[in-house]
Amino acid sequence: MPAVIIDGKAAAAKVRAEAAQKAAQLKAKGVIPCLAVVLVGDDPASVSYVTAKEKALEEAGMRSRDIRLSGDTGESALLDIIAALNADRAVHGILVQLPLPSPLDEDRVIGAVSAAKDVDGLLPLSAGNLALDLPGFIPCTPHGILVLLREMNIPTNGAHAVIVGRSKLVGRPLANLLTRRAVNATVTVCHTGTRDMAFHTRQADILIAAAGSPHLITADMVKEGAAVIDVGVNRVEKRLRGDVDFDAVAAKASYITPVPGGVGPMTIAMLLCNVVQAAEHAKAKSHG
Ligand code: GUN
Image (cartoon, rainbow, N blue to C red; front, side, top):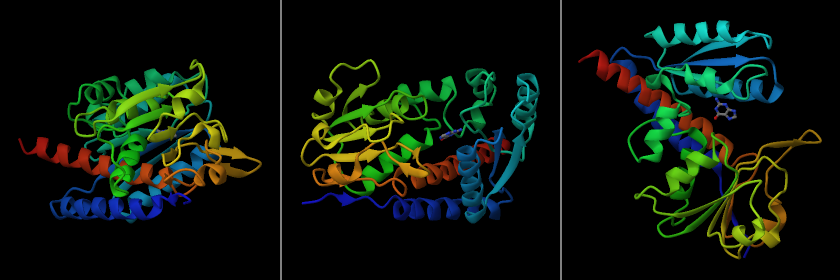
């Protein structure tokens, strides 16, 4: 039987509606959740992601503060802008779109965002909280993947999840998320140093491809009946391609996410949730 194609847009619409409802409740109490979106340079993929994020915020009744800077912006100027956003009580979340153009130091720039506004969950504090199973911001793409698995009733308890990729945005936080007690998967993380990757991927009940390498995952690397989540967004000859050889793998898997229309919409939906969460916390704090 061919795989069920997971409809990320439909799952994301549900999450977005929930976020919009919470935003409306906050609005009734005088708080409009607001995300500052900082884009340095004009990388076309980043421009399109940022535009999609801002549109989704608006549709959910939230605000965005659009800060677009030229590609040659200096690090100290950027750090000054982030400091001003940290201090601005009307701004609840700050998202610095990655990758930053060189020679900007991504870790230093991200590290300057206040922990209370780290809706990307990229600060060492947020990553540490996630690793220790403590409350905090969860990076949007890993969180979106977890919600998709739940939505499709794909069991994680005791399942072997194999993640291909160890990025700070996806692979690393996802490994921590999936090993939480409430999720309870056994996790293997493969990366460029992995010997015989296919040996590992073939063990996966849930295979998550987040390597950024078009069609890296071929059908021979997938166990019959596995759930396959494709996080790859690769532009090949002006077309978007995932990390998974979709047609061949779909014939073997039980579930599969398409690219586009799978994980991508969930990332944006979870961002809305994190902005609401940041605004709720800010409100609770301001009232003692
Ligand atoms: N670039 C690609 N995905 C993301 C994301 O989730 N957050 C940020 N800040 N940059 C990205």
